[in-house]
Image (cartoon, rainbow, N blue to C red; front, side):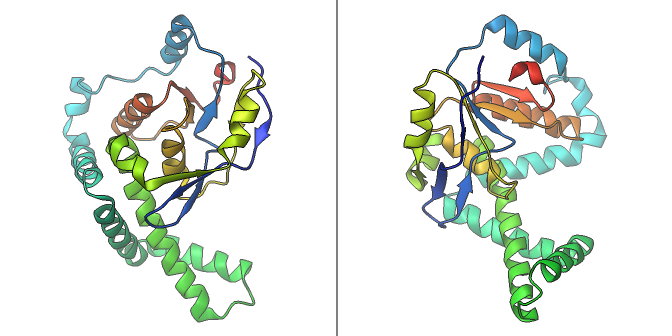
Length: 231
């Protein structure tokens, strides 16, 4: 179907920590025309993956991933304040453990903000890693935190622009930079609209299968990146 105008004025805000998530360049796509079951099935056959209960994923090589996923699911059940605490703690740990990433980020900040005082750049670098940790926890929240827990934390700004575009009888693509809040922004938008999710296959087959299943649970369909026909 035809795709409508591109929107740039829809924002989702988490009331608890006042971080704005712009939805969702590589994730959310809104359409008004329904898809046929046969068409969805045909696209799913293009991206075949073993079912989660397959013996393929009980191989010992996937046991660490199962442990990680179990921890993520437990964190997702915490109150939002608890999730933020875990995310901030994780971010501070990542600051000290991801040495190469820390050096790259510090260099980028120095090149982008040459006039900023070095202590201020270092403080910004530390805040970035804290945001990175929170973003990782928010992925777990996207997959497993119930809607009833997320909705009271959410405020949408500019949703009328999206409704106006959809009223034209076409679709709308939402664009954003690839911030750490992209995932949670798209998930929160799905509390108010029916969305189609675009995604990139993860390198780990088990993580990819869980990600695909979780996103299917919260949106109408998931579309593999590069599947132009699905758009």
